[in-house]
Image (tube, rainbow, N blue to C red):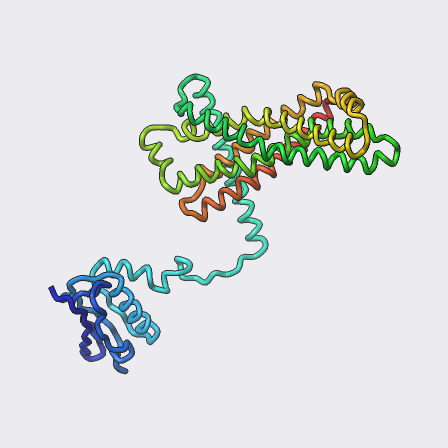
Length: 374
């Protein structure tokens, strides 16, 4: 086999034929080739190739051909690539500048305001239908679960229960304590003006049990666990693991979504209760050690302020928040694209969407409970 590479030119009238010989690979010492501009003559109108004596090739040949073709194109010379191997022709199509851009060859014209509004509207309806279909799939999955037909690993459920519960306690504890401290300080600013410092206990107790405990725990879990769900499922989508499950006859919703969603729905009320307690403890710390309120009096005032209705409001919200966080994480992960950028986008979207849903649903619950009188 000829291990030396060479390139010859044959001018026939206005047609230039470039002949490639030998081995054009990176494992062979580069051959000395003439400058591209010297291969063409002023009367050259078309370019063809002859690779019959080409023994082997790799990216070195592609680089050389790309430079030759770019030069010919810039000088308006017609190019005939039929003399090249089929593999070379396919790869060259990917390197041509003309393939980059819109398929139709039209220039990208900036869209107008109404076109942008229309695109966003269509995107909103498309995402709404996607979310509706995903909700239906979850409903069917839970029907299969309660009828004993869902297939998933019990150790997965145990793992996610541990991941969503005990492992989340440190960050939930820290944030909830600081929220209680902040509420106590904010209340003290106004209540001191009326000599009603003791009502800081009422403020912190009601705010934590009805609103802040469940909401702050949910927001923390959205950034911690919801993002994790989206990244895990998105990576599985990229690696085609979800396709493999479907090929084996395993429903991805039963195997992947059910354990994650069930674990977060179960653990979210427990985290909310813990957040309530720690937040009240933070307010107790500020009230007793900074505002000189009697610990016994603070405790009695807190017990009087919180009843079962206030406590139930926070628990109901926490269950819904847990569902929303798991829902957003799973839907963004299951519908993720097949690239690293798509995984990052899905993770970010899961967190943002979950937080928006949490705030909107909390506002709806607050309005509804106010009408009911709870």
